[in-house]
Image 1 (cartoon, rainbow, N blue to C red):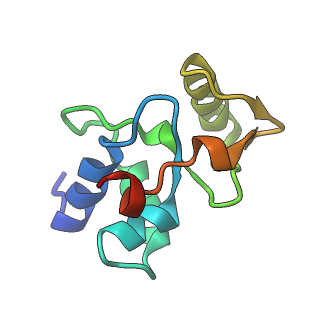
Image 2: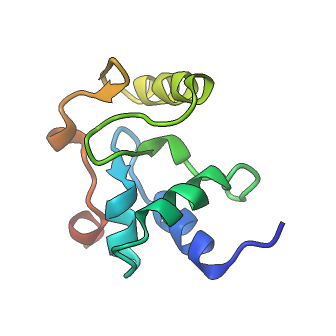
Image 3: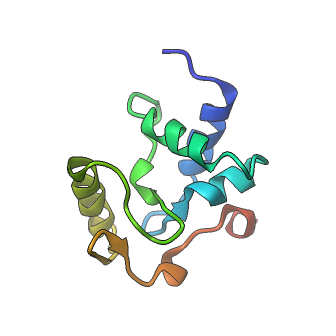
Amino acid sequence: MKHDLFFEQVWDLTREIPKGKVTSYGAIAKAIGTPNLSRMVARAIGACGAAQPPVPYYRVISSNGLLSGDPSSTAKRQELLENEGLEIKNLKVQNLKKVFWDPLIDME
């Protein structure tokens, strides 16, 4: 499968998200200079399965703190996030302001 530069940029930035933190599709879109392409970020995250090194896709969530996707994927994402110490209730990350990683601020 051929990946374009956009997907690679998304994956590279996603790999920078610290363990125990989350960010949003929109925050990644803004950080790579494409603020209107959060849906494309979601598509890139969805296509990262075979990427090397692995992409911690589960750390990218909706801006409102919700884990999105089909039930089997959200259950896996919840498990992975909880293993990193995050609290999830009703598919929503708790204490979002505390655990949110903004690449435009926190990369510096």
